[in-house]
Length: 110
Length: 120
Image (tube, rainbow over all chains, first blue to last red; front, side):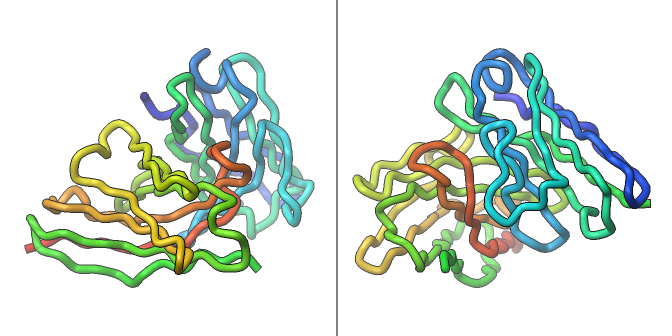
């Protein structure tokens, strides 16, 4: 199972919106509404930000939103803040009943 | 509050074995599956597999069969990851992560990570 494809880096100025893409296949992202997004700050454990494509866990800011179209899922961060600077990973359930992560995206706040 | 507390960093020689623990608290251990995730230095996340905390049945992802063993001690709400015949490429941070709903492979709580360094 190959890793899902994410852009290596995305940047934006404070207050702007950015979108991170996560491209898979019909056997993972396109086939199931089980896409999650994780935020990871340096030296820290990942944190769940979005699950089931577009659901936010309790306590996660509503500046984070998720969507999916075909084989590509997206995470949008609106009103970008300095604290949003981190690595972001998508993940998806697969047709083999396994999980695959994305390649990861480094978000830089300019 | 839910917590997953992992054992400390390990330095091992090639060919040795290591056992990482993940102690859960704040919830009923057997109500949620436990997963393991590897992150090599400067690299992304890799799902290693999961263990059914009711039956103890493990499921290993491709690339994590043979030398990797998941186990449990439900009496102390602890999951274990054992790696045998360690190689330099096993150097990584290993995380335990709890399923959000049983078997949904969405991880709502994570351990702090255990760094395993394999070096002669």
